Length: 364
Image 1 (spheres, helix red, strand yellow):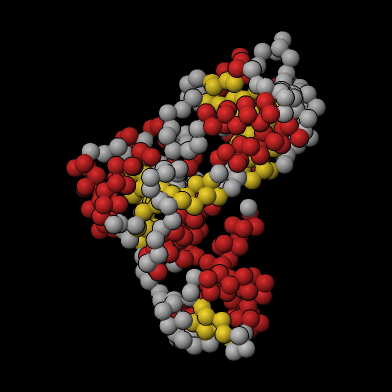
Image 2: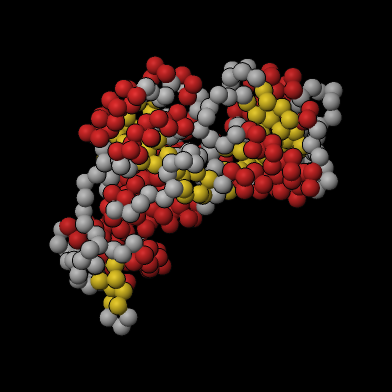
């Protein structure tokens, strides 16, 4: 996934550079672009990257390849536009529920993906506070502000479905970075990701597993129920059904999570073959307990995490985990809006990405 994401950004970089060359008169509409060798030197990219980028631009009808003659900028292709995209965020007075949820904050993974894609696309992005679950009147005021400030908006969660209904009625471009089936959205294949996680533990000869999550009222991302359903299905199919007492949802918020986890894993009870944690905070607490109790990983127990948090790549020992593509989700949402605003193309009803298994030291 990392390579694909990097390719995505390189393609956008090449596209933006070609647009700037068009704007500055270095290239002309309908004119032939330089050969690959010369162009790769001009843009400081490898010929392989350039070739892939040109193929992408041809698919988008920015370029036209004529066999035996060269590649031309289409008359109906690239034009430089100034556009601004808004990223919606709940107003501060109602956003306490989001304080410990990284995807909503500036410098989060989704926001990072949005910023990166906007940078290479030459798009301006604004961070706009808007009330969630607003009344009809509040949503109308929010829409008027959005319409005056932006060409399109990204909505982060289901809390904004009422606003999305108004945006859809008005024909205003928008895209969710959450699974909201009735509206255009970018997300990842939750069931496939969890299936990969369960399959990995089974392949590591794990015959028992404990599943841990943290209770949450959050509505945007994949549900604990989906994870439990998939794990039950996969382990049962392998002949190792998961007992209900091994499915644990810790109560409350993140404070005190270490003590709650200690209580859920009493020292006098044998460890399962594996432990799956659905949130980063439980993963970090579990590694702390492993050190505290002198567990040998992965010999005593195999541990797998599941999160987008980049700190998951910095644990000692390195935690095996499913890395969720939230930065790529943010970038894809911008890309979908840009295609609509630049080319008039309809925003896809859904764009589905994939989670990636990161092999660490906590599984065999």
